[in-house]
Image 1 (cartoon, rainbow, N blue to C red):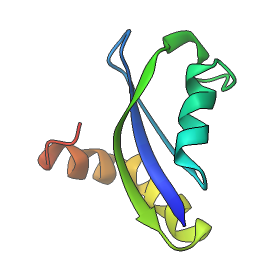
Image 2: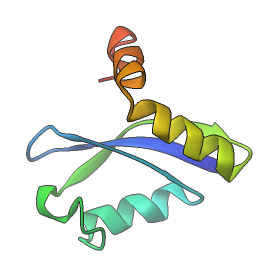
Image 3: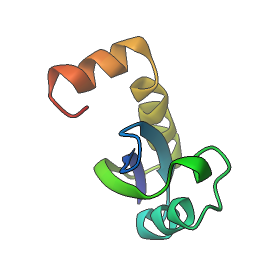
Image 4: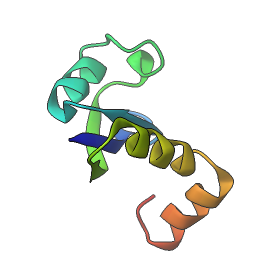
Length: 80
């Protein structure tokens, strides 16, 4: 299983989108400062996630979330 996730910074309220095979381990990495792009905005909490059977599906969904259409989709549903 692969996860597409959105985490939210408790410090700034900003969102980060990603995909991973191990969701809890990845969240720990974000909060431990091991991810360069999120290190300065710790702590993070899991805000939303979806499960996919292949890495390719998860990656495509992440790219959708990062697109204008994806952001609008997330806003329309009150996710972000």
